[in-house]
Length: 444
Ligand code: TYD
Ligand code: MG
Image (spheres, helix red, strand yellow):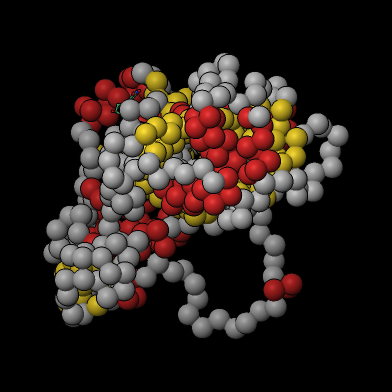
């Protein structure tokens, strides 16, 4: 058996240690994986020497799904839990992963599914305490507190639950491996065996994984490759609203999000997101309303901007919930096209409600908010801005414009500003903008 080293960031494998990963360039991420197990352990149930088959001759397999009946959760999974599906739920400590998993147990228990909740992080007493708070009253929910992967697999195979939850994958290990619990090798092997078991027994499994500061599931990226679905539970820790986002899904589309609110009695789904990302009733200076598209749903958000005289040589550019580079680009477009010089102004942008997005459809409301702050003049009442801004200052159409305009109309926005280049033929009255000079003229 050879010793090998694994990069804990990208999963790169090498026989020679070095301070910097040759693959992803991260420093001090190569970890000794202990004695390597043979490659035969790889997560595959495929036959070894199959013949090619014509795709049109293949039998159609119907995917049956078990629903949690919590619409926000089912949506993220692509319509419910598929049998044998392995889901990784990543998130920062304290975001609510264990809470969500315990509640999932109750939802599935209510749907007459037998649930085995395995915890390697908390004691029976702690979980009992939490279950009381979360009102876990189903007869179908079973708890197993252990750090032993083999024992978990034994218990799955003897008790034959309909769904298994592992909280968390970093807290369990295989006694047969001599590397320490939580090491890359342990993580990989535990995952491997659990996934193989889930596929053989056709039992869906949810695994909780902690996320590092950089936003990756701690340990090698390899876990993400092994599972069918990767969900991230995200949000500001101090904000009660949390977003469950599918970043990989073999059984549904990615980028689908589900919204939850953390209350004193656990998480409740938020089916109407529009109320939570807005703060003011009337139009304020420096504020513009936009419409974000996440997965297949669109909802309205408020963009706040503050442009003030800078006290330092290098002006500050601070964004909350958005991409910093995008702001730099938008400010450059503003300077070039409107001859508005911001090099001695600090610019702050905030998306209210703790949402994070990279939707370029927010370019237009961001610029509208900055202009409003610079001019010290509020935008028209009941206005909403939907558009991307190009490098030449042109306002470009965005995907799913129709669904965004419909959302805006439903909420009673009367002045809907969109790109003049959008192929939008519906009868709704929209205001078309060609470029940012045209946007600037709103303030005249
Ligand atoms: P937890 O699920 O333990 O987070 P994770 O498993 O991701 O580390 O819970 C996180 C926070 O949620 C914790 O600070 C307490 C809070 N919380 C509530 O506000 N309401 C509740 O009903 C529960 C169970 C937890
Ligand atoms: Mg936890």
